[in-house]
Every structure is written in structure tokens, then in C-alpha cells.
Image 1 (cartoon, rainbow, N blue to C red):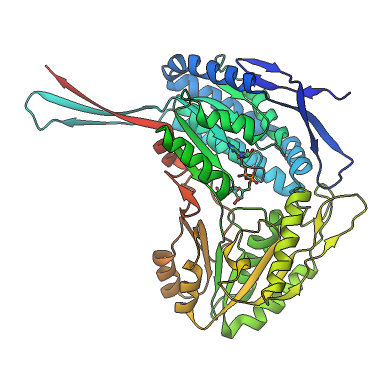
Image 2: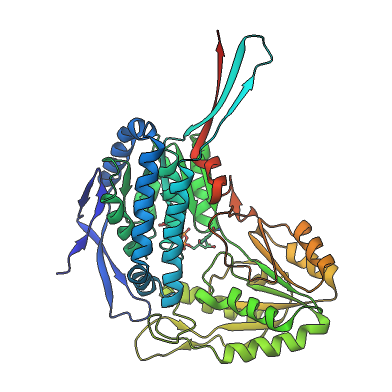
Length: 479
Ligand code: NAD
């Protein structure tokens, strides 16, 4: 019987009657570990502990918060290779991608360690004589953190670090598919000097653990990253009880390639943005909108690059693209490939399930050409290594097509023209715009988030994170 990794509730690791086998998608015979699935009572206890700890933690000094966050950041950075390996093993990103993500998580904790010392407010003269006004930011309270499987350490880090930085207590529920990195963060936090109850980990199902977090009145705010379907349900439940919420959801991100683009840069941006991390990024460039003059050269060069990519075990040396995360996601990817074919798109490369020496969820990257922007393959998020090319007459049509989507997370353009780059930055209807860069891949110290169907609420990361994790108080003093 494998040892069970327990939930972290009220300062203690607690096993559960129910548990979850964390399976390596590169090799389904490899069980990463057995992780507890929280019961409703566990979640109740976690929320109670976080609510009790709230007052005291909100009064903690900036130095105390700095030191704890800095400790966590340093340890993650020091262990980035080991944590990156765990990440690659449970999620299927390649080892270099896993290590890169672990490093980013460490940097995020260190960034917020610094932010703990930099919280500011305003002091103003009142419009009334003898009165002064102070505007300060206070902790929101007890927050629920619900995360998806595709960034198992970075997304938890970019929610947990600011939550603690601004004096909130936390009940954290990671995705059921990737409890390993979440548990590792909890274990580090358990040794960081954080008072009992300030941080709690409850692993398990959305319908049990997530539902309780979202509906419990002691949870003052919910920060969620995941699918549009789940996000919409959570938003409605939070709104019904007037809890603050922040939603980061799907994308159908365009990469525009203009005739004047540097072909090598454009191809690198497309291949990296669309297919790396197995295309399982909310910022993936799933729509490649290419103007007529460069279209054929671009498509040939992308196919040339795809032919050279090795799809294999995430931990194997030289792998460019790891497996899809699980059977369900693989089925979804294959379904969309069939939908695109049925819609009349041309499958120009890949799209087959692959056999490798170990049993895993391997999919050859798929590139569609001759697609129309209105097709489902160009309007719905696939969340796999699948991209499609849409031909555009000129820049104006390319911009129109790029914006013609329900989503608005990241939007990119490859061009050597300053005029078009400037115009695109100003007119792309997205939260993030990239010029001669992949749509995926962002810095950790600046805001992250989208518009339209992709996001709701204030931005995450950088100092903008304070918008969600704090509430503003205006104090008047006379005399
Ligand atoms: P998901 O919506 O299925 O699950 C996300 C989280 O919500 C999980 O922890 C899940 O257990 C939980 N959950 C499920 N049902 C719930 C319920 N009823 N109540 C409360 N919680 C519930 O998403 P996923 O499959 O884990 O992740 C993939 C999705 O995440 C994609 O759509 C992707 O675009 C999106 N994503 C968005 C961003 C972004 O920042 N915009 C970043 C990464 C991933």
C-alpha cells in the first residue's frame, strides 16, 4: 500500500478515506503518488481554521510576511530541478519546461516577498476644514483558490503568494490531476513559519471540495483559473452571495503573420506558441492568421519544423513535446481534429495518436490549413497541440479576424513594420499583446489576464494583484 499524501488543514497533514492515484501521462504504469481526496468535513475544517486565523494574520507585520514568502521562494528555486521533474512527471510538460515553471513559481514568491514591504496608501486633505483622509488597503479576508491542471506550480504560486502577501488566509484546491506540486508547496509552507490555519490545502473533486469553497459564506473571495464552463458556474454562485471573484478562463489566441514578417521569427513564434507545453496553455496560439503573400512559405516552414519535433516521454532527453495530460483530454483533442476535418479544413500535418515505448497519451501535433475563422476549430478552445491557419487578404482583414472571437486573452503579431505593430497593440481586443513574440510566455512581475470571455475581474500578478486580494478603506479624522 502506497503512502498517502494528506491534505494540510489547521497546521496538520491529514489523510483521508478517499484518495486519488496521480498517474504519469508519459507512462500510465507509473503512479506518482497516492493523494488524499478531502471530504466535506475536511473542507469545513479548513475553512474554519482559515477564518479563525484571519484576524491575527491580517495584523502580521510586513517583515513577517516578507520573510515567509522569501523562505518559500528560495526553497522552490533551490529545488527547481526536483520540483520541475515532479511537474513533468505528473502533468506531461517536458523536463526543461517543468524546471522553468518551477523557477517561475519561486520568483513569484520572491516578488511578493518584496511587495509585502511596499504596500502604500494615500493621505489626502479633506474638502472639509480640519478633516484628513486616509485611503488604505486591507486584506480581503479568507480566500478560496481553485486552480487548473496545466500550470501545476506557477498558477498556485501566483495566487497563494499575493493572497498571503496582503494578509489573507487561504483555502487552496488544486486540480485533481496534479496534486503533487500543490502538496509540495503546502509542505514548504508548513515549514515557513506561517501561523496555524493561515494556509490550508484541500485536494479533491471540484464537485465536493470546490463547491463547498465557492458557497461557504466565510470565504470572502474566490480566485479561479480553469475552463469557461466551470468559471461561469462559480461566478454565478459567488455573485449570488456577493463574494468577490476573479476568473481566468479560456483562450483562442490569434497570431497574425504579415507579409513583411521575418519568416524565421514568425515560424518560431507559431510553433512555440501553438505546440509547446503540448498546446495546453490558455495563451496558446491556436489561430494562425496569415496574409496571402507569405502564407505558402509560412505553412511549408511550420510543417518543416513540426517534422523535426520529437513527441515522447516528458522526462526523456531531447523530447520537444510531451504527452497530453490524460485520456479525456486526448479524446477531446481527437474529437476536434475530426470536427475540423468534417468542417472542410485540410489536415496539413499530424493529428494521429502515437505509440511510444511506454503507454501514454501521445498525440502528433496537428496543423490545419484552408480554414475559415467561423469554423468551430477556430472558435472553441481545444486545449491541445492543434492549430489552424486562416488566410487573410491584408493587415486590416487579419486584425478583424484576430478580434473576431468570444475570447480575448493574448493576441500576437509578427511584422517588421512599426506602423502595423503600433496599430495592432492599440487595436487588438485582448488583455495581452505580443509583437514578434509567441502569444504564450509572460513575465511574472507584470499583470496577466484577458478580456471578453477569457477573464473576469481584476488582473493577476505584479502589483495589480493587490486589486483582488485587498479591499480599500477610506478613513476620515477630525481633530
Ligand atoms: P476546469 O474548469 O475543469 O477545472 C479547474 C478547477 O476547477 C479544478 O481545480 C477543478 O477541480 C475545479 N472545479 C471543477 N468543477 C468545480 C465546481 N463545480 N466548483 C468549484 N470548482 C470546480 O479546468 P481544467 O481542465 O483544470 O483546466 C483547463 C482550462 O483552464 C482551460 O480552459 C484553460 O484555458 C484554462 N486556463 C486558463 C488560464 C488563464 O489564466 N486564463 C490559465 C490556465 C488554464
